[in-house]
Length: 193
Image (cartoon, rainbow, N blue to C red; front, side):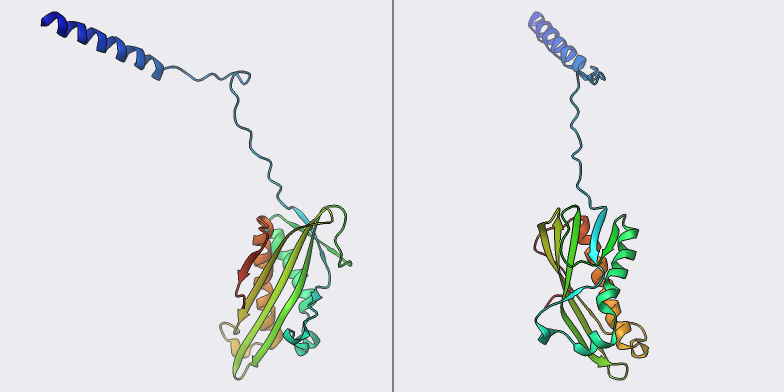
């Protein structure tokens, strides 16, 4: 019995010593013998061209003509996008063309809704909605929709209509920068109808 116990003990010890030896084995550090996974190169957008004047949808029933006449929304968006994108490492190249270029990224925004209800006395009810198409080397890459509502915020009664509409455009620009970091086709941002 004692011999059997010693045999089992010896066998167990040799097995444990063999396994323990594997724990102290150092990984090879020679790059020729170790194939480390390569990081995928991300296709991060660092430069995008955008029209200076943003297009307006043909569906004029959804667009406040008074807001277009009184405010600078069609050029304000591009300026706000430049500011927001710069903070995120994206350079916005302002161009005169509404059509995508053959090289690089091109963003084609279109205002699809501009609602300018209310005023400083009864309260603002402002809304802008935009549709974006992102092109790469002249080919459509992705589309997305953005919409933002504002009632004027703190001291909203003391702000003019264009100022409050500008807040919605600024929010759309911030959302656009988020989308440009990961341009998923069919994405929807903000307060869409």
